[in-house]
Image (tube, rainbow, N blue to C red; front, top):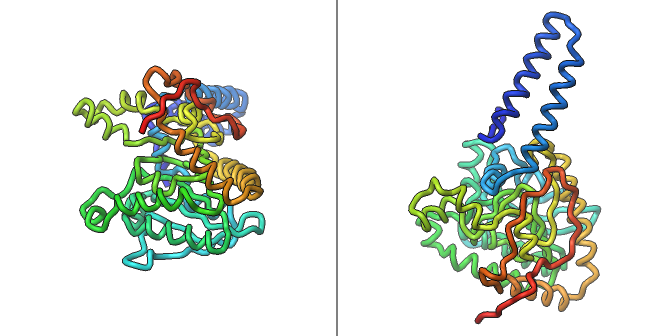
Length: 350
């Protein structure tokens, strides 16, 4: 599969192309050019590291949408054993944009649910470009209730631009389906851990995003509306998306500072698609730690902490908001959990 290059990677891609050409020339001519190749490779590594340490919010959005980025099924098959997928909402259809089922993590059963994108046009058509229909959210809720019945923890993996925006979704009640999920997830009697693995957009993401812990990959994005949609509303110009990205506070450091997420999981320079096994292992370790901590809590503690976590969101005025964060180093280790990131001043509203 051809690798998709982003516009800000042009200098790096050109340097890597020259390295490949030099290697081929060295092999064909039987010349020893190892020293020169080594110097160029070190230069490329430095350039990649510098590029990904200074990403803008819009560049992070582009990375979060990368076609080759690991998607939900990649994580499921890489982290869990004996995944058994469950289909359908028991009312209408099986929405392939939402996948889920029973899996085992360290020989302990759980329910895993996630929004699924494709890596090419054919796969994206099959899973509706990762945009769930109402039936997808109802399937997710069915699986959560199944988990509650058998006292199994739930892990959700978020990677969607939003819920399906077409007529079918409106006809079959997508807003009601998402609202019901928000209500029911807030009172589940079991641990719920949410991981933002790519693009987390609007209510489509929040429909499976209410958890005791919300984790996020360093180059993922999580926002109430896409930058293009925000730009179209505010400035009547979708080309203003980079500007909108700045004000939406959609990066992991900003969201951690605001207390919306609990932990940032590091990615290697270049993004998760460059070393998927490394990133999947990092997510697995974070899940093991958080699920272990949550398993020791009572039902009341789980419900109360989840309620308080989401009630704290939105208690801000412009004067209270902390300054935007710069993006973290691309190879940042998994950040420790803890710290609510709340500003000192809070103004409660009805």
